[in-house]
Length: 259
Image (tube, helix red, strand yellow):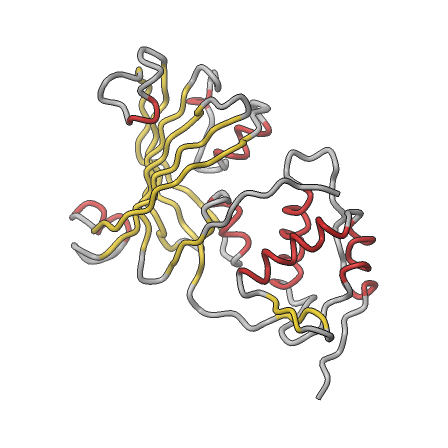
């Protein structure tokens, strides 16, 4: 039985905003994920042709192709030569992608993001600070520790250090309600240019086991992230510890967007 092709007029596409700091291909990718999540593009359906999608979103063919390639990489859709692009059924195991914010990832996999701030402290960068920040000795910084939730289930513990020189007053922001990356972009007009990650195996001590609701000694994934803004300055460093039994991590090379 042939899959029915969804017409471009059957889905509520949100065209890109050229003024947004979010790359065009990523805006398209996010919207397609939304359409798949709400089943406007349902499992098994044949998506509209790329040229039709390009016109509807207001982007070039290369940008459209890049957005769909990311969905292919993530297993959301599958290209079949001579037939088109089909929406695939999804695995139960959730994926995290290291080039996206936690809030964005939770929304993309259909979970409601929430954070609980359990510790905050202002201080100065010194010889005991992480190596990534050590080139700025004496600068004021803001530390916070959060538990990150998806649908009220604890997913990760995160410790973050932010350079206050680039973000004056950031300690006054409620990070139980706000995404750090969104604050950097929208409140401080800082455009994130690069994020470097290292991923290691770890295990839950007594405190982490209690906070993340796992057994003592349970395997965790440790992700250290250094975030840089335009001009090459680091703005924050985070150490995150996540469940490893229900989540996996992926990353991909950065792309330069084009219309």
